[in-house]
Image 1: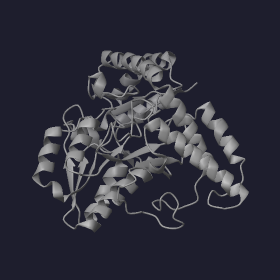
Image 2 (image 1 turned 60 degrees about the vertical axis):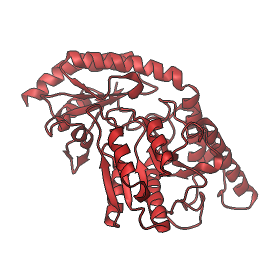
Image 3 (image 1 turned 60 degrees about the horizontal axis):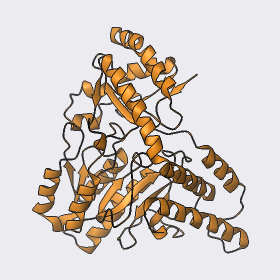
Image 4 (image 1 turned 90 degrees about the vertical axis):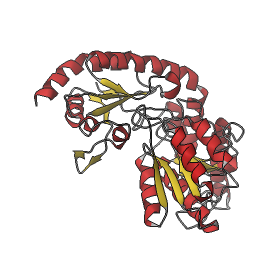
Length: 387
């Protein structure tokens, strides 16, 4: 039996999402066609759009479907920045937190090749954005800032950023603010409501992180925001994301999102207890738990641990052999674990940055999974340290 502790990478589809996908897959019709089958497909898409918008405090017209959060991040970062500079060439600076997902960081790197000045905003030892640095940077030349991007919850450490304060700073200076909320949705009270988040311009979400299918996500973007498209074709999705819309995936995504948002408080409380149990057990084994200690700044489903004597790559292989699935906090390239950019930004050494392991919980996780990990881990750490 495998104990799956990698829900932040992807979580199993919820039964309601599977049932909805199967029903949608049986439907015939392209949602852009004007015949009866096409109109029925369009109805499914628009009803799903309305369901997603309702759960996130958005207007249906603000929901732009994409293939996932990666594409949504790209569209937001590239599209908002390019559109701003097209209006005024002085809007040439892009502010990005040092702990962003690679989808944001890579898009920002692309903008740098186009002449944008990309500014990496530092974080503190907990992985939280330095608001004082952000405020100083904005005040220095607010008219030059094309875009600000900072995620809601970090995909490695689970650190929850001060999104409301960041949005307030953006609103005060009329700067577009993009937030990747893929790891926060379903675990934290995520909202796109303008009244609650007046400075939030765009927000990325993903289907397979909430128990929906892979291959579907969305960018929530204000209707009055200027965004340059990153793909071209039939002009679907507000002319921002051309391509035939995947009706069954969209319907399944909406069903999953609706369930996790409705049941969020109960599920988050259950997972936080399990996460705390896991963190306490890991500390007893000598691990350092990375990230904030305050509940208000920590996602309930992620526990990131550094094991000083064992590289993450070694420990993950041993865990897999023991039937436990987890992830390295650092990125893998050509089979080699690279130091975690997140840990380096938080002040950890290069050696520590290759020793981080992320355990992430989800709707199928129970106490047996935590117990199984803690029972086998002492022997695995001993084996790993001797290699």
